[in-house]
Amino acid sequence: MRILVTGGAGFIGSHLIDSLMSQEHEVICLDNFYTGTKRNILKWIGHPYFELIRHDITEPIRLEVDQIYHLACPASPVHYQYNPVKTVKTNVIGTLHMLGLAKRVKARFLLASTSEVYGDPDVHPQTEDYRGNVNPIGLRACYDEGKRVAETLSFDYHRQNGVDIRVARIFNTYGPRMLENDGRVVSNFIVQALQGIPLTVYGDGSQTRSFCYVSDLVEGLMGLMNGDRIGPVNLGNPGEYTILELAEKIQQMVNPDTDIVFKPLPQDDPKQRQPDITQAKTYLGWEPTIALQDGLKITIGDFRERMMEENSN
Ligand code: NAD
Ligand code: UDP
Image 1 (cartoon, protein in one colour):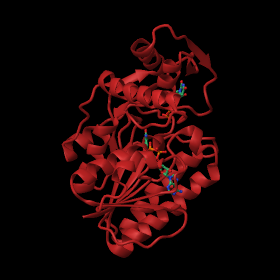
Image 2 (image 1 turned 30 degrees about the vertical axis):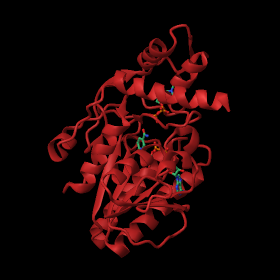
Image 3 (image 1 turned 90 degrees about the vertical axis):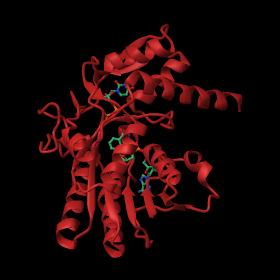
């Protein structure tokens, strides 16, 4: 199959491309390199089945493909809040263009949506039928509401134009290749611990998240794409930790001498988050297999290697 991955030079996209290439698909990676890097896909450049296109999805593009994994969108609050209007454009105009492409060439289209559609949830754990608690005028809205519209567009293209869609609601995912300056909690804590500077816990650290290792997530995305279930389907690891527990875990694993400091909690920061993955288990036969401890070990190793490489340059 010829498969388009938008946002393919990013963290999740590049791991997805590794899996698709290993299955001998033809892969087109489309990215504007806002938060993605060529380094993530370097090993495929020059491969006869791989094509890289530098393109911003807020502009239309014509391609012939069989499947579209639509991941293009900055995922870290630091990056999506840097230019919030652009984040809305990427989610709305960009998704519109990709759905238009799917309609024209009759490609199956998978949207990488997010647990952020549930906002600061008052249902716990979150099931797919929960409609969420999002502040439409807050700092996170460009991303949360952007993804909600992206879901709406996907379902309307499906109902109105028969586009074959799949919608994944991805929960916090971590692993090798996250950017050092990504701003998300796992990368921040690992980089801080490796540098021997205090780990910055926002608020009192009692807010919770559930962390899924990237290889598990990629399997879930491919299972959803190639199955019959339209979704939305939650994809995440139900193992739930407070942010303080995560800080202590990484502190112990990397450098027990580092301190933990407390910083102000950002606006609208969700208090708790845990996926109910009954649907993914039932309809995709999917559930995560990598425990947090094991995934963190690999991720810490990757950061250590990259930071040593940088220091020696
Ligand atoms: P990432 O920032 O590493 O990757 C996003 C990629 O999209 C980058 O390569 C970036 O350069 C590209 N991009 C951004 N705007 C673009 C545009 N206008 N045109 C073309 N390319 C553009 O993030 P990620 O963690 O790999 O996330 C991938 C997708 O998964 C995103 O859609 C995100 O919303 C979703 N998601 C991720 C998580 C997570 O925990 N990582 C959780 C929920 C949802
Ligand atoms: N967080 C933190 N310290 C950091 C970065 C993040 O305590 O250096 C907290 C953040 O306030 C949130 C949680 O960790 O409660 C997860 O943040 P992240 O940005 O990784 O993801 P999201 O909030 O989008 O789930």
